[in-house]
Image (cartoon, rainbow, N blue to C red):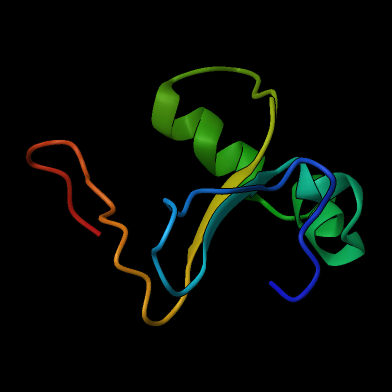
Length: 81
């Protein structure tokens, strides 16, 4: 992301190269993201998967790890990407 939002924070340790940061609540400032939340079938699909009759978006969260970042990104045991 060329323009991280106001909630972005860096995750590199001192002396590490590259870029690694997280950011959240971007749907409130990126019109295309907000449009997907309000007009796509994503909420209906999520509700069906959870067996629920409603879905609430709390916030979005993105992790950005650029080239040459030595920071490890660990996933829970058994997780897949």
